[in-house]
Length: 148
Image 1 (cartoon, rainbow, N blue to C red):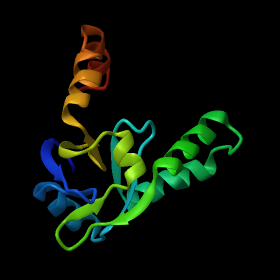
Image 2 (image 1 turned 90 degrees about the vertical axis):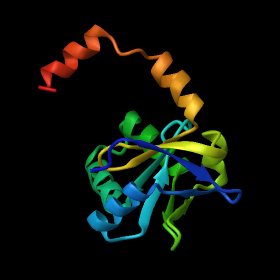
Image 3 (image 1 turned 180 degrees about the vertical axis):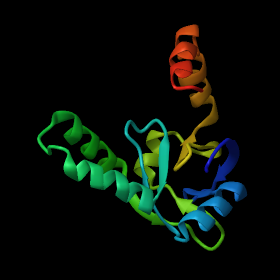
Image 4 (image 1 turned 180 degrees about the horizontal axis):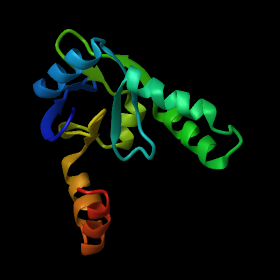
């Protein structure tokens, strides 16, 4: 399972060095260097092992293609998305369109989201998620309903 967060570096060519713990888990679990790199909003980057992304695509294929929410989702993940491979040094390319939208340069934060990785410019995550969306007592009640 991909959990926790690590800082990592984006090099000048837009390649992200995947943190060693995440890289090890991905290699052991998926035995493939193929990934789908995308985003829904452009504020962060999602790095999906290709088999996990293909499961999502299967579900999307079962949804009505004329449903506006489905169309919007596909439009956005296609606009920002590219299939990529991890190189021998454990780096993955984040293409310029997505890298610029997410403002990823230098040191970034790589977070495990159980089945995929999410990459943020660290200060942007802190201000747009942690500070702008505080965890409330109501949130705690909802989480408790799931037995967590």
